[in-house]
Image 1: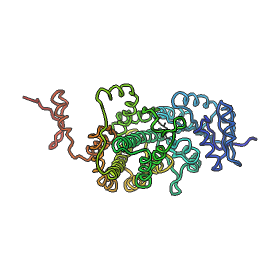
Image 2 (image 1 turned 90 degrees about the horizontal axis):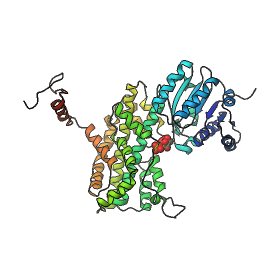
Image 3 (image 1 turned 60 degrees about the horizontal axis):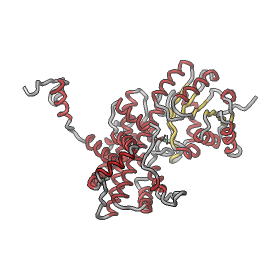
Image 4 (image 1 turned 180 degrees about the vertical axis):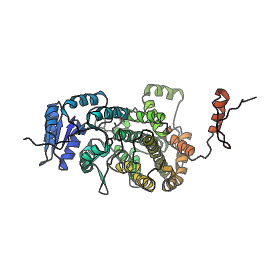
Length: 470
Ligand code: 6PG
């Protein structure tokens, strides 16, 4: 009898291949399927000596060689390809088998697939995987959700291959149904927001304060050695040193100011509107990527409005310090929004997402990993059902210490005509969140005035209507 493999992978693109190689390095026997024969061959060729790795071009052959209950993961493009794979797997699987979608699928699709496969006795798990190609090979952050029993079948494997922080794996059970993909979606929303904030800060430092790429590198290097230490700050530090092979110039300067997207940030914003929950910095990040696409119009408008940036005068070093603090505060506010969204979605969609475990899984391996996650972990350890990290005393201390810099830097950006929508939305969120009395009483009055929508009072229970102006 042929060997029964521990784990099967459908789709041997770079992510699928690297995850399999990672599993094999941790002692699991793995088999991968791809119609493209070359991919199976290169999987086997890349395997570490002494590990058990096989590539096949027949799905049937792969499934037949898996130990039961079978554990199969697909890493194929989100959407129809996932449904197609499920259909071709169905006749080959048996009750109790576990099917994992490790791509960036929309959580509503995952939910639909869970409900489709569950009556057939199959466990479908949506699983977020973050960390890119390198992370998949050496230790990603893994966000599995779905059936708890199914999770227990794959848990040892996931814990073995995930990134480790203080010896602890950056993976945990994220909750029921589509929770894994929901958590990954919000992870990406936060990723969009932090990237937007870093880009604004770069603009302020470069066009406002006149920092060279070398100085930008040094600034980000210094930041990454302190409280801003994180994957995105770290790679930004290195981006400023990269030379262009074609022109010999700094590569960052020859890259067009137009960013693409695969849509996970947009999904986060769309779903936040549905819940509803306020995530204005993520919304702004999505909007700014969209606006970046209007390059031709921006060029035209820049001429019309002679939109030039006025260089900042004054103590450069002091400003750089403030910009770092502003970035730090705004990043805290991005996490606050994303985590508050998860808190509400968990309740509304009955996913039971353990936020403490979410931030634990995000401490390493993923794109939004940062030393800050340690503080959020403490916040959720003190109160696992915390609705917003801003309500935690430790986080409040950070915000109290840094908010002045955030305000100063926003002032600077306004005066010097440097767009800073992400930073502004972060402070606007903060100011609204910490305001005991918002001006929304006036909006209620207006709604009742023109539409008899009624209003509540501060001194009595019930709904009231006034014949305004009479
Ligand atoms: C990750 C990334 C990964 C991917 C995104 C980028 O966690 O490893 O988020 O999933 O890079 O798809 O998304 P956009 O193309 O939308 O920027």
